Length: 367
Ligand code: ATP
Ligand code: FE2
Image (cartoon, rainbow, N blue to C red):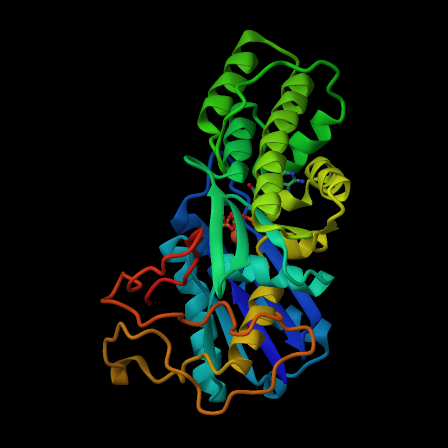
């Protein structure tokens, strides 16, 4: 079966095509604001402009005709409302026109699931992106969060620092380049609280260094060494706590080679195996949405799109499709797929009672 996946949660509009768990194409178009941060309306405008050509290019590169697609997946959130709406509308239009199932995918779960493509089976995941910083693992039947940022995501912190240093968005890659030329370590606050981390104090201290006229390369070097050491520490603690022998990086910041080196070194010292997806599968991308949509579709999760005027308001979550497909050969080995609802949903916006288990569950919100 062939699935098309659309991503549009924030700065990126992307479309990927996946066949039987294999990625055939992954076209990414990132919105880069001329200055400052991302305005949701401007990002949505960008997505509207590029949507048709990105989808067309993804089909072309995959060598697949629209008529050969079996289902359409899209990022249902979390993300910026106006940007999300563009992807959801494009996906829904295709699904209605072609009478295909529509599969709403949780963006964060997709960042994690796509890591399985590089062979991780039961890892501790360090999910480091723009808005999220979490240590996640599969435990007692579901994904659980074992540690996370107490304030901003690590990528947003790097982007905020970059903005003040006149580095255009996204700041992470340029900070990585500058850090390689750093010569002096400037001490910055090291903020680990148990399994959690915090970045706003470090950001303030780094900005103070910038105002004081410290060398930018030295600040970038010190920033990376400090925050990546913190992330490595909490990841290792989760590995020890859960007795896991694999570690997987995910999210845009996972592209950073210094972070990869630090986590890989620590994992190997513990006798564990280190995994990181290829760079284009770390940042926001449509292939991870198509990949996760295929897993969900095979588990019978999806919706049959109907014209909007025939839909009744509901908070029941996506209805199950009638005939689940057989699982993929490289599908997660845990008994039930992570995006499924592990317990009956509560009223809209709640997810029912929490099980008494370690770690906080990562469950898709009621749609
Ligand atoms: P979320 O997944 O939490 O919604 P997002 O979708 O905005 O966040 P991604 O597209 O996964 O995030 O990642 C974008 C982030 O990754 C940006 O903050 C960017 O600066 C950062 N990033 C990209 N490449 C690198 C790099 N080489 N080093 C450090 N950071 C990087
Ligand atoms: Fe993301």
